[in-house]
Image 1 (cartoon, each protein chain N blue to C red):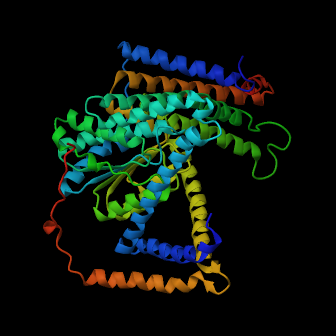
Image 2 (cartoon, each protein chain N blue to C red):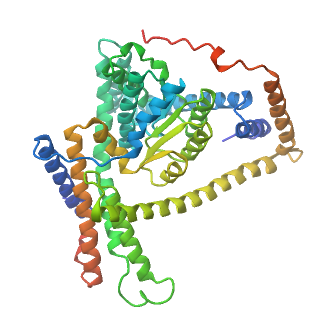
Image 3 (tube, chains in turn cyan, brown):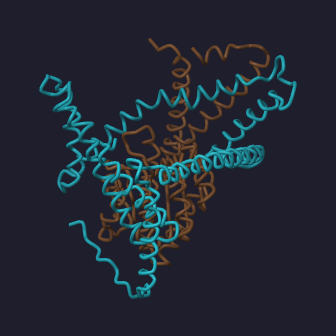
Length: 257
Length: 259
């Protein structure tokens, strides 16, 4: 949450960063690169702060901290510290233990949910599709026909994922039909997601158009200035002689030791 | 003893595990030799590495937004499996492979996997840990960082294998404009269509998880995959049986599924 006194700064910064990032659509340039590096640096620091807050703050200063007798925290902290053996040549292998423990825990936690959502829920949804009954074969589109198409789609699409049998003969026909169903699904999903992306773009335009500070400053005043910055950089970049690729010296490779 | 609503899940879990274990042991014992069908996306990796070698440009590799401590960890592990194979090929051909982890916990694993691959290829001295480059643990900065590097270094091949979300189209579309050969796969059904549209080769859903068995030819993994095929047959049989029973007015299977 941005404090109110920083609204003006946030608006100015937001406009420049938005335009500089969009300038990537024209070409990778120093301004887009600067924002890219800023973005990555912030993300790295945010991740560190988030991890610190999620683990150590809870363990040492939270309501259920170690000092209150919750020594259970010691186990995950010690396991996590084993990660640092990655930097040891002698005890390098020890870093694999926390990895294995976490992967094992996740496998155990996930399996029930996976069976329920990927198998049982799928089977249940398919077998309960209406095939008989009042109104199933009346009107248009026919609900019964929809059900048959879905059942064929599920069975044939599933057959596409057989790996240890060659897709030949009857299985070949089934997998081909399944592939058509998959492609039709992907096409529909693609269209839907593109529409969602357009709404994100509109949201950004609204930010540029509507953001204001104390009714006298509107963010979109800055858009031409930001665009001008991009044009200046573009002209500057074009005026610089670029060496042919063969003359660019290769980067020095550093060894692990 | 079993929570309400999970009885059917438990029964199905037992069936799936039993099928998997039987198939696995039969394959390991050499009693059956199941063959895995051709997966074009995986075959194309060698072509991509060869192209990068000829052009003298790097290969960009990502495993999406997954870590080893989230719900999609299995996709990350599948992606790391393919990373090992790609790194071994890169080492053999002398191509430069760059990997960009999203999750910090994956970074040491990736370094380890790539180093082992270079050792397997007989070129441990050519492995450079700086080719594993952390780009921040946030979705869009990471994606922007990857595509910035793809543009600046003019990558010859972009390989994306793992769990992807909204950044999938950004990577695949921007990668397309760099002119690189693109191979991408994910089991996130809400993102795979972007890869199908924008990449040269796409691994759809479970094809990503089958990669480990496909590339390693390890009997244990092939057996496990064979067992998974049987669980799909069981699912199909249950669906057909359920559809027929429901149409005939018998709700026994439906009632069991909600137990």
